[in-house]
Length: 273
Length: 297
Image (tube, rainbow over all chains, first blue to last red; front, top):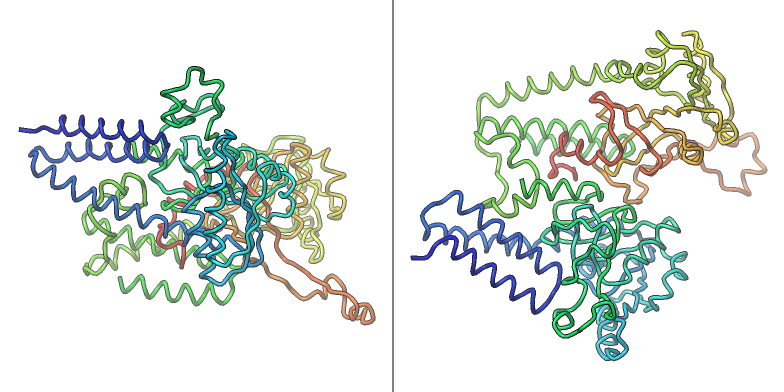
């Protein structure tokens, strides 16, 4: 017969395969979380087939909760957007989009500045163009006035902006975030000009990392999976993500509620207790 | 379930009447939490589980939140008892805070405060019994409650000086500590306090003077400063510019805001009836006092 151990092993291999194809923080943290409750289930039920049933059931519940989480976050976050606000956001984030949709639904008028969020390799101009237009196009569909700005223009535009709203690929234990490269710059500029910096992220993105500086972020997240496999010298590759420290973040909006960065580690501990 | 709905409707009416008095809403939420706890205890759950949303709950809970429809005859007595405990706690808050005074105030210190706060008054009086120190009170125009504070403090033989709000920064370099009261504490650790407090806090930060806030726990509100200015209260500008100055009044706009917002980075310590806490710890206290479902009354 099959065993829990076997199931665990096959799940692990599945997660590894996934991360080898698309090295994103969210995939790995989501996988980690799911694996976590395999071990929790196995403690409660010793009968294998029953265990499997419960796991499938819980998997569905997990899926359902996760898909609801974006709406929860939007409900929490949209009161923070005032009428007439000017918002700066970075790259393409579906959570941010949902929040802005909710704000539009509650009849607020605001305008958005989106950064281009260039990948650094010139050869990928095609994708970069597509990427930035993705966010701007989606926003225009909602009838929000959008301005696309250069990444370098963030410091210039910061004085006009009322708040900064970004998504996150991962939220680390210290309360900092891992997000598309350029986010750290925006956070530093926002801090310098005293603008609130809000982060929206679902709770499955909480990851058990504690980077103390940019170098501490593991390479497998920084570079795309195929780059890791093919390139000889990683120092010549440009990273795709950076780490923003918690002192630069004002508030995090998650489906667990509105959290200050110091509350994040508490939430993580509660999980792994 | 019905009881909670009743309380919630009443709470909504009361907070709707005067949104700046957040204490009303806070107490309603406390009572709701008490009811939940008592119900949970009777229902057989342990106290810590089922309270908060957490990643853990995300993974393990089998279904949606519990509904409170099962009636229990003991529930009423338990809830009443718990509410009585709450009342006793509320009455003792000022004394609890004052008891901690000796740890924070040392001899020959210069302490600064603003306006009139009964909590700070009790705090300083308690310390004055054993220590000798000076107090500088900013008068907090336009209502000048600082004057009343100074009179009361000097009755206890504390050396008090009153000065205008404009001189706060000038005097700050000689001050050892700033101790203030507040109207409300927000969920991110920020304050809503009398106007003039933000200036005081910035001056203290500039001189690296610790800013201590004495406030009982019932002032802690789970709301965030979402800038809809729902907290702001404006009163008659009579205090700023009297109606006798009729000619000028036609040409200018006069405002008299009552409250100020002080961001959490400027605050060093919160002293409340349950002890001293850092502003970054406020979220934890929130989770102990109120249930997340009640944050939005």
